[in-house]
Length: 79
Image 1 (cartoon, rainbow, N blue to C red):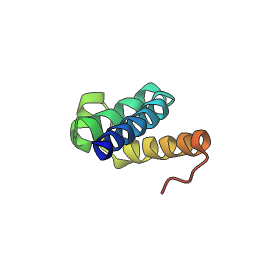
Image 2: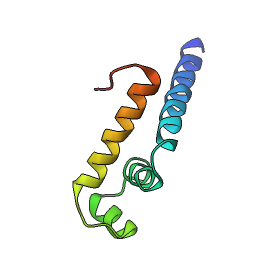
Image 3: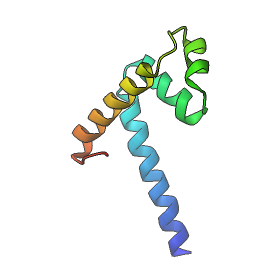
Image 4: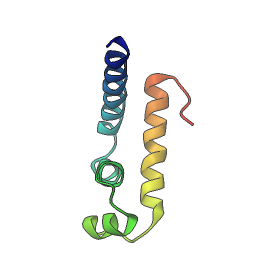
């Protein structure tokens, strides 16, 4: 039981960290991250949904900024 509680707590904390960090991104970058990772949409689907040119640049740029935010807030290197 204790192991299960620790797992649930760890997932909650991780989701809180990601949620807080994602909320600091500009709206467009939030949407790209959410569509990509939480709705598992492809680059093509995201580009079509958001009227963007199809490019991995949008996702990579969003992830880069998310990493920077998390490093600043949590003073830990994200690799």
